[in-house]
Length: 167
Image (cartoon, rainbow, N blue to C red; front, side):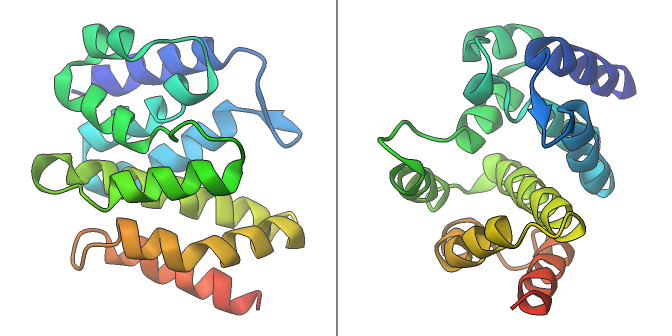
């Protein structure tokens, strides 16, 4: 399965192309998410590398399914923001979708938490107060929809710490 992690990374890097994460290549964000997911296994890391390809690129979900399987595609679909007129609407729809997740697809919630934590870490280290403020405002609804006790508590504890440290 380690081979699948490498394939997912290579696929995502090509798919994201010249997309940037702040002033860095997008792969920096993808690697940060995958590193947070390492304790959760290879499948989590594969989903972590692919978590934004459907949302941010022209790659359709069927291509993810063909290349990485049904479970990975289902989880990528769950972490992909729903369409909406603005961020608030997209996040509300996505949170509603996440609130229904259970069973094997719960791995998507771990990936979503790792993605948010990677964003929080980057915002905190870059002194991006406006982004931290945005995440702080979104956190209660995000937590209500995506948190499941015992699933990835260490990620949630760090998110809570970063958000409270920056208050």
